[in-house]
Length: 132
Image: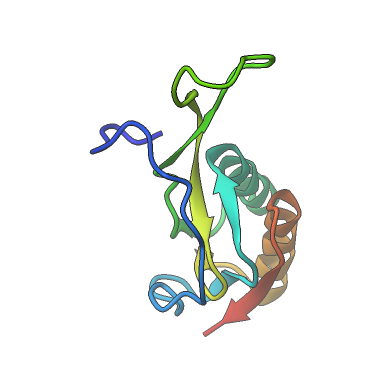
């Protein structure tokens, strides 16, 4: 969850096209690249992060290249029409194809590949393992 946001509630918006920023490896030697368009919730990012760290045990350094700052709202169950926008349910990141999600450094390629596969299972989109 962000510490501070300019607006408490956002429009949903449309996720169009492919990503043009954050498409190359900047920190590590290995990465997980998005191949689809979806909202990735903060819980999904955290689950993927934990899966990677659990697999790596102690070695390697991990970078998370995305941050969930989009508030997603939801109205209560059986609430009638009207009465304004619902309350914030969770925060998400609207991902587009080509964006790097995670980067890894300091481990062997096979280890990195397996760790990224574990993380990819926790995410709602198709991904691809990439290396420098």
